[in-house]
Image 1 (cartoon, rainbow, N blue to C red):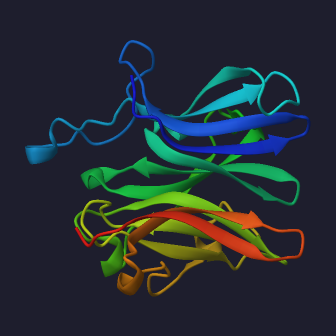
Image 2: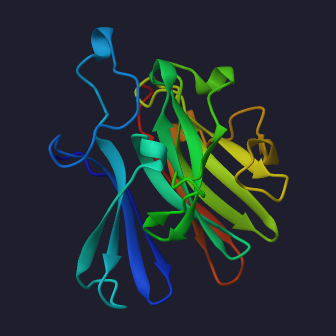
Length: 231
């Protein structure tokens, strides 16, 4: 139904996968689990907004793709999906809507790049690993979204966006994996302060939702979006 957000492209095996977010027509997908907005936000019900996956039909990144379906961990509406890899296992990280309409980061183990793994009762295996707790994550409204996974030597980080995107206070925080279990919230340590790049002298404001480029020489570059004005 429109609003294609946050596309990423990844390669697993000999296929390419595009993960993005869209608001779907109400007769196309079930309503997701999320609080219904009220007051001035009542017209912004995102219950039909999900991450979705496209798979390439061949090894050609520019070839045709097949729609593999939406990703809805435990039925949650969600945005900004991405992948995390550890110890030969694949995980899906996304921002899902919770009580009070705030957004939190969730992680799910996957069977393959477009299917979530289920437990013995047939339920999705999903855990919340971060929610807005710091003051800098709650400007305008409570937000953890736009996760990007960074691998550096033996360490794994998740850099994410926080606070309302239109408030002028949009920023980035970081989770550092301190334990072995990525599905355990206690394995992740949140940065005490925001880690975003904010430079008013170069007209860079509200930097958010980044991705990382790794060069063959070991250099890492961060690509992000930002506003050119304070407002």
